[in-house]
Length: 369
Image 1 (cartoon, rainbow, N blue to C red):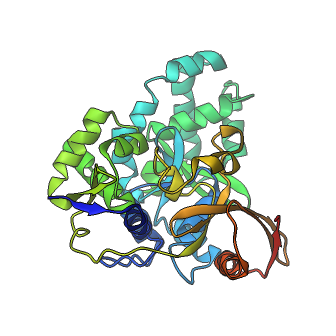
Image 2: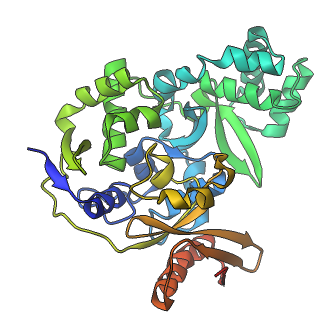
């Protein structure tokens, strides 16, 4: 019989799965190990992606994470839902072939809106492939210049679309920034040791990684996160069956890693400062377990897909925060969404202090209420 979990127990388990609490079965200690644990981590905003890693690697500085990405422990590309993620370098190709191609299904309509043809898109792939050949990498501006020199328009959203298309096709990937500038490299040259998986094996691997890093979750959550059809999501979960188990949360069956039901059941009172584009919220379609619907507008103003950085206590979002960084320090402005007494505010500042330490800067705190 599946184990029944209370909401508080389910939240503590999710925090543990997401490496925001000590993980009893494994202790990922490097960027490569954290990204492989997740399978893919939201990283459309680079600063958020760096702190998502730093929040899970105690004592790590932003320079450490940047150095790990330069060592190619992970890379950024568009493996699912048309969104940039960090993925294990060796797994980028099979992930693009499994989930990235679904983003191409509706691309003809978007291309027509931009005034581009399929021939234009394929020409852009050839141009970028030639420009990047030889192990080098080019900034975004240099890539766009190469496309324009070949007679391809890059104004408006055309340039972004062509860069995206080349990466989803598995030709390019997003390399680490040079200064503040995004760069691109050839996937085959940046990650030459690519794994090759048969489709059912790939579905099983992705399903297991998602469940172990986000569980407890439903099959629909996996489909929503991966961009797979519900049929394929269920196929992957079935293929990964030996590595999974089930629990019930509020009467709903959910998947967890097979090691979870035998682990001690706990609740949490941890206070965390998370970036806006973190898997803690973006890894799920149904966020009601972590986010009061009354606070949705504060976390995603205008419901435009731009998530604010959050303060999380005992698994629930209790505030949002913004930072202003200068050469001499970081000023953090905190807006509580629930009442926080003096002791709770001190714990929030301690959590945000970890972020300042990650940047290697002293912190100053402003409270809006």
